[in-house]
Length: 231
Image 1: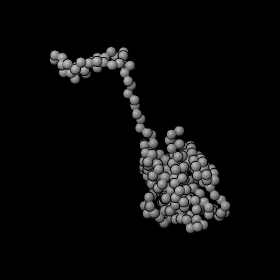
Image 2: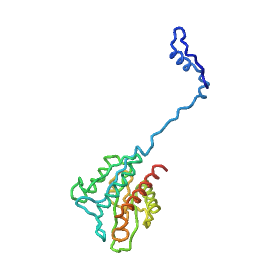
Image 3: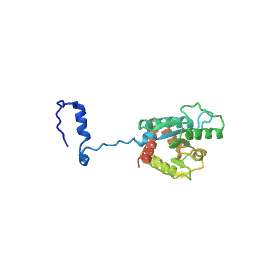
Image 4: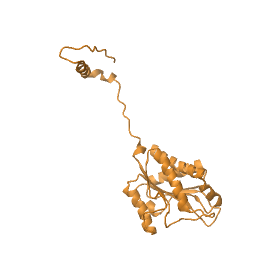
């Protein structure tokens, strides 16, 4: 509906108040013809906190690869790449560590408890722990993702991330499976622990040291997270 309103001054009424009066007295039965206000809702991703846990660190090197790769260094590199990708998408990112300087004692139980505490105190929506694997048989390779067996959401996230890694990185699929790791049990939020590959396998160790491969792996994990929040 279009109204033609003269702006001429009316006795005792200013042009602005006259216009206001007209608008306020429009027949309400015709109000449905007016444009509706579009309600924009916040992107749900912007409200989510993800805690990323680079496995090991400080006093604890983690596994050592056949070519000398130190697990704690590679997990940190990939974790920071993953966090940067997710942060650009609007997620709130918290790391359990951002360097090799750790805030917890050189004690395994206190170490794992501290990582869980960081996630719980941050009221994390998802907890992602990044690790590399090792085995006494060099031919074993591939990616596997663990979740707390009592967490339905954890299982869902683990499957989404595992599927994205296999699809995008072409990693050997060792599946999403329940695990009894301490951080999975102690973190309140849905939690997953990803064993990205075996550094006891020479070819996989070389891949995991490649920056381009680390970028692909990080993107694949991030895509699994996107899938979870956007399904």
